[in-house]
Length: 179
Image (cartoon, rainbow, N blue to C red; front, side, top):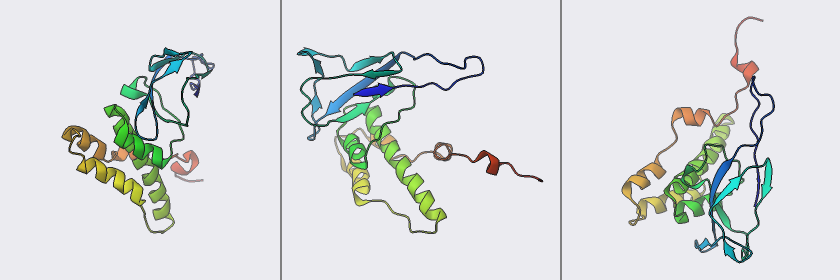
């Protein structure tokens, strides 16, 4: 697993050094089972200490590409940029053992389709939601083992402010007035 980090410069510090980021992870096989993290035959802690601008972690016994659950328990206050597929996000909604990870997967999936459907709406195209995405949310509703409070959180749509954060602002277009 390759990890990189970058921190935007600030007025008082134009060049930022890498931070220490505790990255709590879990890897799942295709059946939803947790893959025990091992290196050189010894167990590895699920919290990886990311301390460099770029770092690679190699684990033993991972035969197929796993589905990673990253930043479990919101282990670090960072923005994650990982190219999850719809299938991986729906998988995490159903299989992640960590409640935050299940909720975060649902929020990420909603963000994808909110952005997609806003673009479709602006182009006067019909809105859509793939069946596998609807099925993932339906599974949350039907899961009798799931804590109802967690189910309610997973099914809660992002706020208007959270939705606004999904869209880049064209700064020149956001100012109006005389020329």
